[in-house]
Amino acid sequence: MVENKNDKTGTYLDSNKDTTETYGTTNDLKRETNKSKQDETVAYSNLKQKVLSSKEHGLGIGDKLTLCKKDYVIVSIISEGTGEAVIYKVEDKSKKHFVLKLYFEFNNVKEEPNPETLKRIKGISDPDILKLHDFGVGIEKYIGKYCFEISDFAEGGDLFNISDFKQKYTLHFIETRVIPEIFNGVKKLHDYKIYHCDLKPSNIFFKDHDQTDLVIGDYGSAKAYDLDSMGEFVISTVVKGTDFYRAPEQANRIISEKNDYYSIGKILLHLLYPENVCLKNSNYTIDKEKADQITLRQLEGVQIINDFNPSYGRLNSLIAGLTLNNPKLRWGKTEIEKWAQGEEVDVQYTKTEIITIQPVKLPYAIIKTDLDFIKVLDTQPSWWEDLFEDVDTYQALKGWLGSYKDIATRKIFDEMIHFYKPYGKEYVKEAAIRFFQPDRDIIIDMNSYNFFKSANINKDVEAFISKLDDIWKITDFKKIRFYLFQLEFSLKQIGMIFTNGKNGTINYIYQC
Image (cartoon, rainbow, N blue to C red; front, side):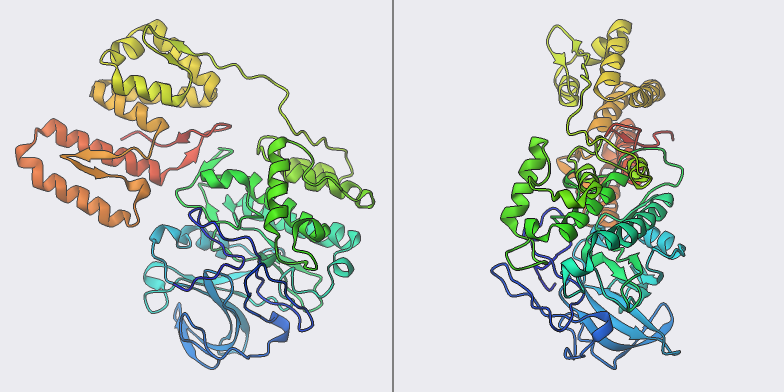
């Protein structure tokens, strides 16, 4: 796979993603570097065709390819600098132009664009969403190796495709164009339970040559969830993102609407205060030291930069509210709508209420956290009698869970325990532990399986089943049944990763 450190959208195993590379720049714009040379690219609207073929795919101008049973010809190579794909300008038989994002070959199938998400986005027609016409994953990959997306061609390039930041991004333009159009696009995605997860200037495009019509695009990192889900947060097995613009909770795989709103705040900070986030004499390349100082200020619960320009007025409070570290305090749809209507919305840096955890006090332990609870189940022979058979202690356990998480989580846990009690103690224990620790290993005859950390889940499930096939003749049927229960429970957690209400506990379907 080609490695590029410029504006790289990566998983959280990556750490060197502090500079930003756009799809293109105007001819008179000189890029600054951060101790490394960035690949020069050109704008959608001003292609020079100086790159003849891509290094990754070996495709060049004039090459023909068939994608989703449609024929295209490559007109130009827009960029090889996104870190995950090559961006081509292509045309179909009618000479209509499109953008083809042809990904590098993925080493881990979990990092590939999600087909259900792309299918849902393809069905959206909205003036603030870059139209996705086709995509290829799985058996639809190009030559069986490369995922792709085919979208409308944005003639004006991305938000960085301008020669003068201050001249372009005036208060009037930001208030009348940038904010409402990005906000409306994000709301539309959220209406379909889609979270973009990688909003940044190079993923916001000017659809028109005059650079007045903005649209959200590039959906390779997007996540989609059940349309009927009422949960505020979700947990994903793999989350991508770009360091400076991603919400801090994404590092823990926690996704919600607030992630995208955080990114909007960081985009506005970059457009209005490039001198506070970029290298000297650059409006594009993120300065790591300045970014680190911003992070420290956020952790301290103070204003994101110490020198807000008073002339920017209410835009300063919008940036401050959107970039709060705590997603519970961070502004979202409601606050932005109030702000847009001229209402004064408080920026609350810290919680004022005090939450008291109701611990469970046992003769040999005190349960205050989920780790305390799991330790009791793992180490105490009398866990069943102490926690689940004793009525008073079980009520205390539910009280602890209601204060540690919330009432909705307590109800789900209680229903789950009552469901598995008829199956026996070991089923209750396994379900209770995995409720809090879904990525716990499954051990069979000295072999360990962890489907949450699997690079190829189909292969690992086959290996699991094969192991059962090897041992079933010499293993008690009840134990085989328990192994199958662990497999089913784990796969259901992976397949139904929804969070319940305000807490971070995974809510899954446990019924058989």
